[in-house]
Length: 518
Ligand SMILES: Cc1cc2nc3c(=O)[nH]c(=O)nc-3n(C[C@H](O)[C@H](O)[C@H](O)COP(=O)(O)OP(=O)(O)OC[C@H]3O[C@@H](n4cnc5c(N)ncnc54)[C@H](O)[C@@H]3O)c2cc1C
Image (cartoon, rainbow, N blue to C red; front, side, top):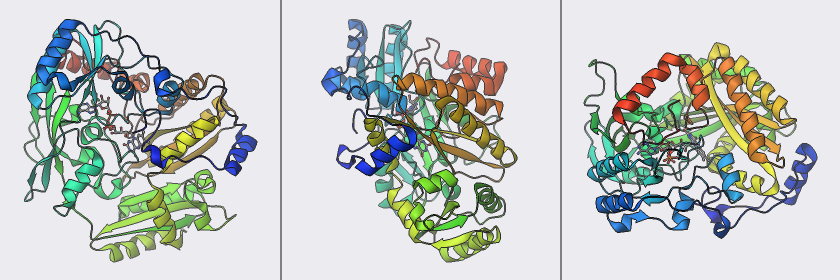
């Protein structure tokens, strides 16, 4: 993973000159005044861990698994949101942990947590490091130091109950590795978020991730049958049956808890047969409203494709949705419908009848193939845009069908009011019987202080989402960036409950301070 950007450096691409010219002409994008810092230029706080804490950590996991080198610290600094990238590209390493600790077992995690609670050292669980909500930058104040607890050594397929279709994994297993291990048994999780290449299973659970095929396989939290969690107070074992009436489901307290209540050290996950066939196709609708009505019909009446996404007019036009495939110059909105499994033909025909019945025009498989081919490419494009002086960032929400148009307008209007004339694109890619998520991509010319510029816009848009009745996050989570809006969403009593749980599980407050809990 590139320390200052996304993904495999070999896949990075410079923007072609005509695209740069277009960005300049349309959005006023100009080259940044200062080039991005080199790794050696990143400014780090001096390591602050007391000797006693370092000795206990070394005793718990072994000296070779406690790392304090500059590069390791930089690679565990914050996550991969655009402000995170802008800060590290500017050489700001102020959120770096003092040490990176790699436990090798559940017991070692318990020992580390105990030591950190007694030494008042903050602990940030670290999976793939792809958080986009400030979930990896601990608030240092009042702590003797900060460690990143990298879960990379707790990885792999631990057991498979083929009869129940449940697989047990270590939390540090990266998604491609999980798929590779399951493929050997003809199985899949079916979880393919855009961060698929780097994110981990523990991170998916901790942040309630949702993948591109959520219509077919469900969100990640739907896949979690059981969890083992290490806390400073001991171990939680959760989930002993597929469903239970034994009180409130405590798994739900851990899902989305973003390392603030404990460290997930094991996951029992529902698996599916790997699909025999996959067919993705494109449809064109006259407008976002017409496309939304068609998606709602599929969500409410079926049959639901595994992948179902609708780009608005701007996203379709700009080409994130491959507009060439839907006819140059023709207005409209692109739908991608992806069918996976054994009975692809029948479900494709039945879904096609619903889409056509709502005014959709079939475009064949080519747009679907193009989408599938480029589905993990956008984060690389973000790096190229940042380098030429454009800020590009995403944000998301969800709401009931009846409220989606209001939410859509509120977000767009606010972004335009805050950023002048940005490019704002939107798509729906996670649908439910009762509603859907809206996922926005924003491109704007960088100001002299692009972090402040984005944070101002983000604060305004978060307030607009809350005021328009949406949730502050459908799948990115809360972290530090959404904490205040989350507090408004759940109200004062909800905040008290969160604090009570935190106090009971983590009395010293060392687990990911500043994240999630208002
Ligand atoms: C380019 C890009 C595309 C993305 N696309 C999607 C998408 O399509 N869908 C989606 O849902 N999200 C997406 N995300 C967001 C992100 O990938 C998800 O939130 C993912 O779940 C994070 O997984 P991770 O392993 O990287 O976790 P990290 O970023 O390492 O951690 C996320 C949070 O969980 C905590 N945590 C991590 N592991 C554990 C553990 N074992 N126990 C307790 N706490 C833990 C961390 O402390 C942190 O607060 C995207 C991010 C990027 C940068």
